[in-house]
Figure: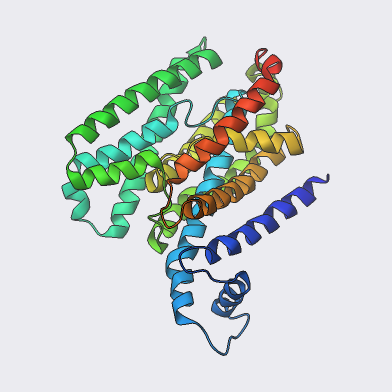
Length: 347
């Protein structure tokens, strides 16, 4: 299948899934009405009579949630693809190597230890503070993992994964300690991070997250050619004229920016960064020039679908979206591991 057609299919699926997602909920709104209301809001189509209740539900509640799902899904998908490319390992998912845990720890620490400061700031600035804190946590964790895994100046994949397990355990223990010492209100907020949810979506969260995600989504695809050279080995990439260290710093910085900001607003959403690039490689091959941008599109689509399931599976109760992605992602990833175990054993 032509790669351009795959991009078109993914984009159309995102639009269709988005309209369905906005229409579903306690108040059902037909997809056609959702589409016309959005066109009316954009000034493209004039509706003689607008249902004000539906108008409020769509533009105050559901549309921000949809946009948050698109941004977070794109961030997780594209970061997972880029990190797997830079480490030359399909298991190097942000959650597995501890980056998400580091971001969560920093966000939880801000909630648990600086609550007084947060309450004294405006909501908008508070969101930015939390996003920046999670970004710092993700960046420090990525830097620590990278430094620990280096042997003779080169990152060792096995050491990286083992260090990631240790960092995950340490961050989990410190998060548990802060949770134990937290007040009741802080405990509710911390629980939000641990389970993952899009329930806090507002236009503020969307505008807060957008720059942290859009910058990596725009810049990371240009690293595809360099990551293809990385697949040959760092020495070979250097011989091809590639500035290896600059490429590493650029990819890790942009990936941690997207992951840290996303985790700060939605909590940990497992398996997205691991599974989405795998599926894209099955369909489009291993060329990172296509894997990276397509992973952003599939990540957005996957999280929209997961959000629909989380809101409708046992409605009116809403399941944490992190639980849904884990329940779907873990079996699929185990299937891929079993199917490709001979190939993976050679990595």
